Amino acid sequence: CAKQQGRNGYRYYTDDMGQQARQHTELRSALVGALPGRQFELHYQPQVDLRTGRINSMEALIRWRHPDLGMVSPARFIPLAEETGLIVPIGEWVLRTACAQLKAWHQEGHAGLPVAVNLSAHQFRGHDVAQLVARILRECDLPARFLELELTESALMLDTGTVLKSLLALKGMGTRLALDDFGTGYSSLSHLNGFPIDVIKIDKSFTLEVTRSKSTAAITRAIIVMAKALGMKTVAEGVETEDQLRFMAAHQCDSMQGYYYSRPLSVADMGALLAENRRIPLDLIGPDAAVD
Ligand code: C2E
Ligand code: MG
Ligand code: MG
Ligand code: MG
Image (cartoon, rainbow, N blue to C red; front, top):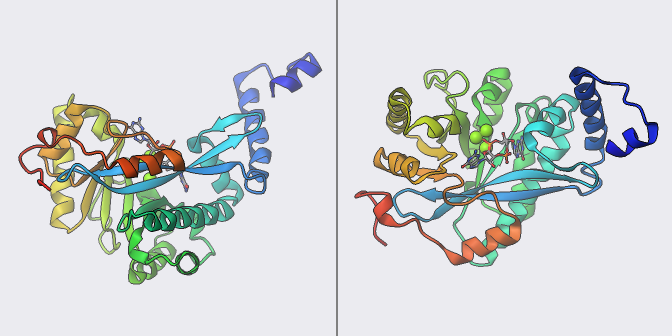
């Protein structure tokens, strides 16, 4: 991009809109080459059990390392991948890579640990996701209970019939289903009636405010209580501070994920963290902490 500008000597798009539109087009064509060019990798962020203080799961998060553009955030390219349909092969690569990596970790002695993978609603359109997941689990020789699939509320509402059918098939196979970014969409658990959801991930915008805003604290407590009443587990996303951690633990949120414990890590760093088996100090997570 900078190189091209240097060669031309002129910039034809001087306004922000033009710049953005051009960047968008460049990114779009670069994305086509990303999978064949092996430019994607997965990072893993641990989730920590708020009773034991230890890692109980991890989320696979895609990273795109472009040779010229550098690291491109998934917040930027996932919407593009959805628009272009590239999310289908990319999503399949993510599932296969995460399952194969988890199998390797199991064989290294971290048996019993699940992995969570994000799914886009577009992966359900005209594709049998349940069949794809079944095939990948078979290929990797991984029992379905070790795979958790994360969906957003808006994805569920986009195409309720198709998505629900696939979710029921996935649930029937034994995979776990999580609702991502809860609170940013319809935020209504009654909307979810009939969806076979096992886990609710409380969006990081709540976590951020929970120690600063009384109303956010009240809403967050209510989400945890409602989820529990419906037999669902809760995970607090975006826990960065000790106060946020204490709040979530005190209100019986089941797990947390966030920079406080660890950022998303490369395979090597995640492997090292698993081997270390580091625990959150039990005095931080309160009287309910389980002693082991
Ligand atoms: P998400 O699924 O809600 O993932 C959590 C995001 O929060 C990640 O951003 C993670 O790095 C970030 N995060 C974790 N802990 C903290 C914290 O303590 N503070 C803050 N400020 N942020 C934290 P990331 O990796 O940039 O991913 C952004 C979004 O891109 C994901 O949100 C997900 O919606 C999407 N995404 C990532 N990987 C995939 C994928 O393989 N497939 C699909 N369809 N979407 C993906
Ligand atoms: Mg997620
Ligand atoms: Mg999320
Ligand atoms: Mg998010």
